[in-house]
Amino acid sequence: MQSFNFGECPDEVIKQATITQCPDGYPMTIRSQEEWEWITNAVNQGIDAHMEAVTNRSSFNSETGKCNVHPEELHVLLRRLLEMGWEQTEDQIEGRAESPHNLRSSILYTLDIEEI
Image (cartoon, rainbow, N blue to C red; front, side, top):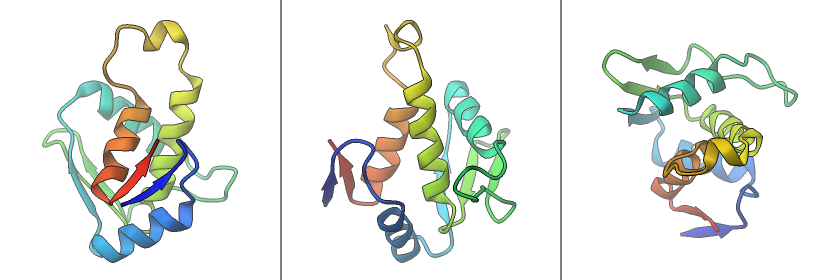
């Protein structure tokens, strides 16, 4: 397990872990409507300031809850979840068990990466 301060795991570490462990893509099944909204927002941003995007190499099906994120794009999705979490206000976070940060942390944990 690799450990980093929260939000500081380098994109290259995420990319290498995903390519090594999930060469055919990172599979997920999302059941939460709120998580689908976060994922949809992250995917629909298009090209970002890093000149990266989540493309049609990744697949998302909201009807079945199935996703398969291309190994070279998962770090983009995770970076955007991190940014969304920072943008949430205290009112949005208060009383909730889940946040974009929690989803990011859960995904990283499955790749043997921990942000503390």
